[in-house]
Amino acid sequence: MKINLKVWRQKNNKAKGELKDYKVDHVSPDMSFLEMFDVLNEDLITKGDDPIAFDHDCREGICGSCSMHINGRPHGPLAGVTTCQLHMRSFKDGDTIVVEPWRAGAFPVNKDLSVDRSAFDRIIAAGGFISVNTGNAQDANNLPIGKEAADEAFMSAACIGCGACVAACKNASAMLFVSAKVSQLSLLPQGQPEAKMRVMAMVNQMDAEGFGSCTNTGACSAECPKGIDLSNIARMNREFFSANLTGK
Amino acid sequence: MNWISTFLKSSIGKKLLMGLTGLFLCTFLIVHLSGNLQLLKHDGGLAFNTYAVFMTTNPLIKFVSYGLYAIILFHAFWGLYLVMENKKARPVQYASYNGNANSNWSSRWMGVLGTIILAFLILHMWNFWAQYKFGTTPYTQYERNLATGKVTFSPFTGEIAGKMEKFVDTERNVEITQVKDLYAIVADGFKAWWLVIIYVISMAALSFHLVHGFSSAFQTLGVNHKKYNALIKNIGVWLFGIIIPILFAIMPIYFLLLN
Image (spheres, rainbow over the protein chains, first blue to last red):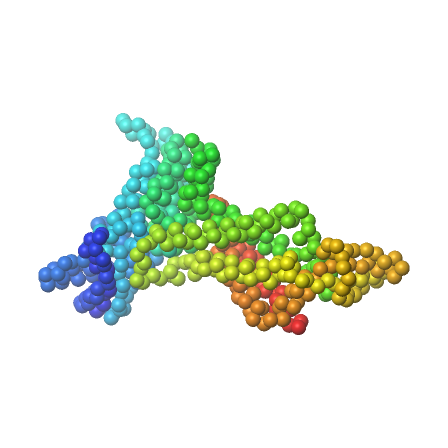
């Protein structure tokens, strides 16, 4: 396959970026999208050019690092996958593909396609945890948790913090991410003692980071590689109302 | 009370205000529609004109209507403010953005649809509210035969103190109603085909606004459960997205065809 790329190149956070054209020949349909970029980068390095910076780590869809906005959609045209799980067979020979970084004020560009998602880390640090005593782990069955609650919490916990929700949202809102992180703890008894403090702190941090607000378009959930449901946002809203009305 | 302002300044608090005012405006639409459907009654406007007098003189209704104007303005300008705020969250736009792949276009164009509706409301208030309140509205006299129930009407040129006078002529056994004729203003206004087209397009904008807006308000309120999600969605699409806008749109079309 031959692929034409329009890739966002930007030296650093301060520099002005632009879309640059690249041609990649000898692309195998079985390559992942990231492997196609590896081939392109090898080529650029051989020529003495600056390789394209992009985030990647596990390359098996669980770390949430790869973050490309491909042809107008986070992680490209497929549903329920990250960029590393997207293969070139999803494109046609001779296609022109536009690749951009996540666009959000709260996700400044580090370089090229790599963005700084530490805003998510600060939201987690604000309240996305439970406090437990150190020492021996208690017996696993000490706290009975119903199967349904466990499953629901696990569905929320599937969030890998990739930021596709922010990238897809027309308002660059982080509500799906934050609500998944609020839900995974508030659905379980371990999360109860700090539940009110948690939702207030995490929402406040989310606002402070400069993410937009939610208009319920559902784009976040549709583009989420882990299929995090919009009901998480409704749950977070409920908890936020109740925490404001009854919390300290 | 500091916590209230902190809450309302949060992204979720701001959205709550949009959702609550939006739902209030939805209930207003039902009231407005059921009142205005009297325009379609074949009585020369007796029922509609009597209703118009009630709506503009009853103290409670007057009180609610000023609240309604305030809420319409709040919903419109708060919404525009939120659109601008949300635009700031993405300072650099995408060169390529395929929104249709992941969301309904009406959900992404709420601000534009709302602005069309606001412009329509200004026109609508000018067309009827302002003419009724400040313009030289004609009066009509209705005679309802108390024995047969038959209504006849004719222009009325005399003078009465308020908007309506009602009395029974026992000799002729008729109930006479002399009333400010808003019906005539409506019937006259919709002789203009271009106005009818503007009204119908505005109702289409209202339809798309509510198809997303009604269910979206419930999601913002935290009401999301598989037991009733389908019900909320269906009410939003069928009642507020289809039935109500179509019934509203029928009125100008009816008067255009009547003329």
